Amino acid sequence: MSLSIALAGKPNTGKSTFFKAATLVNVEIANYPFTTINANRGTSYVRVPCPCTQLTTRCGHCMDGVRFVPIELVDVAGLVPEAHKGRGLGNTFLDNLRQSEAIINVIDASGGTDIEGNVLGAPSHDPLEDVTLLESEISLWITGIIEKNWQRLAKKAQLEHNIVQVIATQLAGLNIEARQIRNAMQKLGLLDIPPESWGHEVIINLSQQIRKVAKPILIAANKKDVTSFENISRIAGAYEDVVATSGEAELALRLAQQKGLIAYVPGDTHFTIVKSLNQQQKTALERLQKFVSEGGTGVQKCLNVTVFDVLRYIVVYPVEDEHRWSDKQGRVLPDALLIREGGTAKDLAFKVHTDIGRGFLYALDVRTKKRLGEHHELKNGDIIKIVSTSRAK
Image 1 (tube, helix red, strand yellow):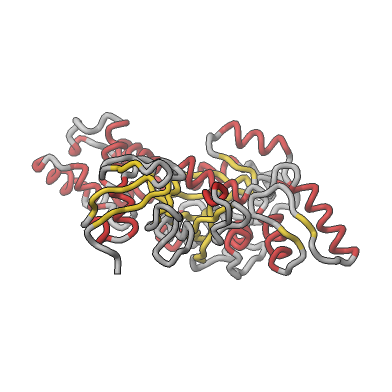
Image 2 (spheres, helix red, strand yellow; image 1 turned 180 degrees about the vertical axis):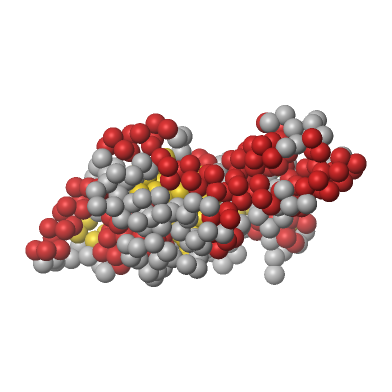
């Protein structure tokens, strides 16, 4: 499991509740700033239709035709203004974002907490400020790293004509690729401008663009159960990638499922009560059922949109037996792997095992039985057999 998504935002937005709902990892939850100090890590999942619905029997790895593919979710320390200068838990916060490919900015859409995360007597804070806060702090963080010893590095890059690699080296450890830096520079028209002539504003603009391509942000407009429709609409109108969520409602559903009270598939807009309840439990679940029926909690949707729409991943199923869609032990569709859109058959081979990739001969589309070359681009939902001179140990 290599895909890592960070949950970020100012303190007290429901971020840790969202994390617990998505992972069922026990974390401290309280309505005061800096409840989360060290990053919490857990396994969450994206939801996709399972191909076993095309077979006469289920694969045994899905929930009635719904497959859950694992990703890592990281709940980082709360963000405050000037985190890039080390204020609050700024250094810890930013360090925890290094390896994440995307960030879910969990904001208090109700406006019930101020910019520092303190609870207000009445909702009065503009949640849009929380969006710009995260974008600004990450961009300024990247700016600070690029500008270290900048004149010396710019002179070296200009002499060697390798400015992209120089910046990539500066940003080593942030999981930012040279191609992403080149992409950002190209969008700003900087590839042909001598780096020694770049000023502070140019580097800030470059850092903002690098952040957009290397650390894209999706907004979880959280606490939608206590938020006005106007607030949600205003946030969705101002930004492209926004999902209204209620981590608290999702957590209630997941805990009820864990206790055997209900049958619930994360992401559904309904659930079934499967156990006799007392009146208090029945009333609470009836109220929750009404809320869920009006679009769900948004937590699963938030994860899916981040992985599939923002990061552009697809799911591919490698098998060894093209007739039974199974591995050598007879397990049907044992693995579901996330790879980047545009990934090839050979990319999948390396994902399965390095030796399989090195010995790649060809791949087979098990549905059509068509032989595929190493450069064949895979599609979402493909079931693929890899033929190689090597076998993973």
